[in-house]
Length: 141
Image 1 (cartoon, helix red, strand yellow):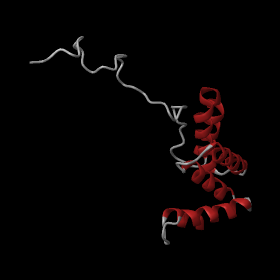
Image 2 (image 1 turned 60 degrees about the vertical axis):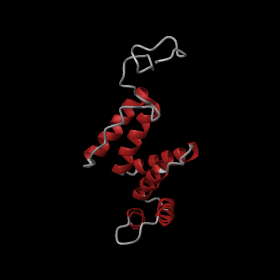
Image 3 (image 1 turned 180 degrees about the vertical axis):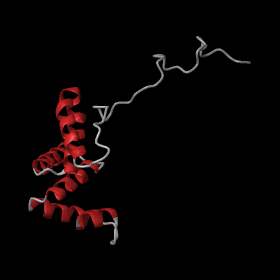
């Protein structure tokens, strides 16, 4: 697909704006691969907001209805990411559909909260010094 060539710089200079334009044209014509590609671009943009995520999800649903494996895998991951354990059944179903078509790496993200910051330190005390001096004004001389 021409949009991918510009997106990844294969045989042409990398040009994300042109890639997006081409994906949008092809997606508007109902091409499932372009719908999935445009959705992926929308989701990968660091400035993506709720409108872009909603548009990406709508594009993925259209592409999934046409059997597009990339869309199945991405919508499966997105479903689990935003719906958490409640969406696990649907996420698994979508990932299995993609896997049946040979798509690899389709496990849903195990962390449903993309902003989750796991603290590996079980100590709830944020002070790294185990023996803090109770008098901070005391001179060390």
